[in-house]
Length: 157
Image (cartoon, rainbow, N blue to C red; front, side, top):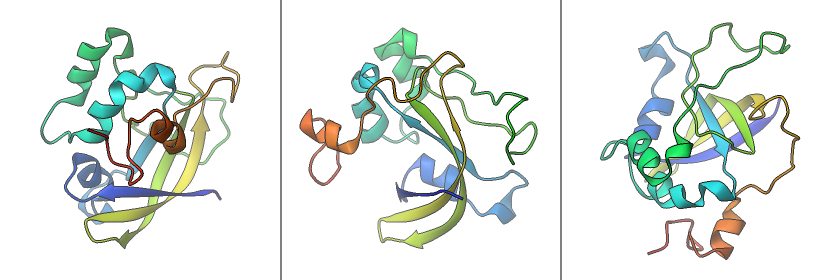
């Protein structure tokens, strides 16, 4: 089993959605981590520098670039995996390099944020014709190099 660690600030909608107690709902707490590509650069400030509590990110993304409206993510029936049949996945940005379906294993208190240790349930490609690793994705190192985020990982002014 692959594990992935996510740092989630406690005062965000992402935190509330993903870190709620499994006892509070019948739904499995899952997230889809989208590995963005250079075409998503215009969205980074919006996605990383604001909270869904304050703005509707789906609406704002479509204003920045109408071609980047959220789409449904589907898992092919012929995939041999352990994901629940009919698992409701969040809508995602199109044309990402990869989509990682994550489920929460446990949380570690980090003060203003928690570290979520997640199991990687599935790694998906944008479509069947897409060749894995065929285009660059936006790593934190790349975002720092472009001056979009600071050394501390925050959105640059």
